[in-house]
Length: 124
Image (cartoon, rainbow, N blue to C red):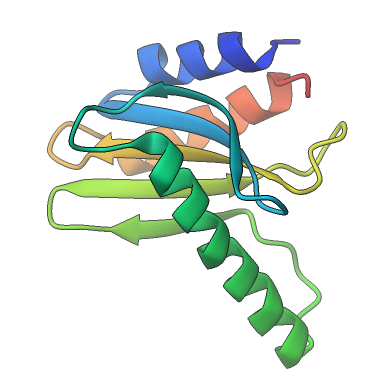
């Protein structure tokens, strides 16, 4: 079991192309932990903004009567991938991992696989 800081460090170090990672509470919009980012890319602001994405998708699913659960949400930009992975186990309800990847260096399939493993080991 990994605590938040350890899990975020692991994500940044082990996922090829990762430039930032955060654990976010989408009920409040607060980042519970961040690692990476830059002066021109504030992870705290991005995390808060992506809570709106998660909430909108959950509302849409509710209106449509969809019973499935969101695994992850992918946003592709011309030079970045933004991956939002909702946590499902061990008290993770209402939380998501947010990963920013450099699209030129990242392998999206491997990043999703590694983020899932990090989620499984995360102790919230």
